[in-house]
Length: 160
Image 1: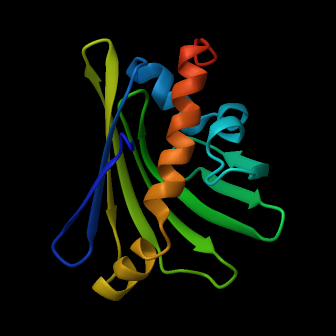
Image 2 (image 1 turned 60 degrees about the vertical axis):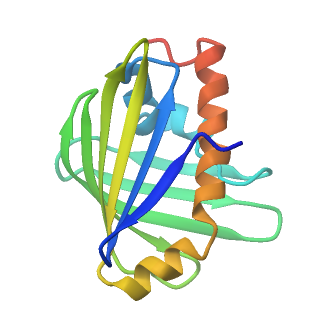
Image 3 (image 1 turned 180 degrees about the horizontal axis):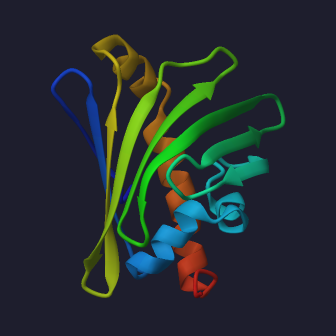
């Protein structure tokens, strides 16, 4: 059962929420440090991320490249605002293989008991782009990745 909640707002927004059993600092690090990202942000089973560039500062670059046995995709982007351990604002676009329109993403990490409540708000340029993105089954890939992040937290791999 997925721990991820996804809802749409208006014509262009997607809001994803999920709780993690790790403090905000650890979850934030997992979302920004390349060595950690390459362990959990792999989407569906069988994926690898051989290239991971993450420069978590205003203007910093993002590049993630994923590979599965029969295909590869990549994402590029830029960090706009980074508030350590609490908030990330960035823009990203996928290449699957054609470039998708920019997705403006704000991710918040808030204390929730001994864990973290993550709220990710995506803003797409139009309803059609949002529907196309949702039709990819992105929520299933995200949850598969977040389940790996949970396992890393359980094993103490997110401790600074």
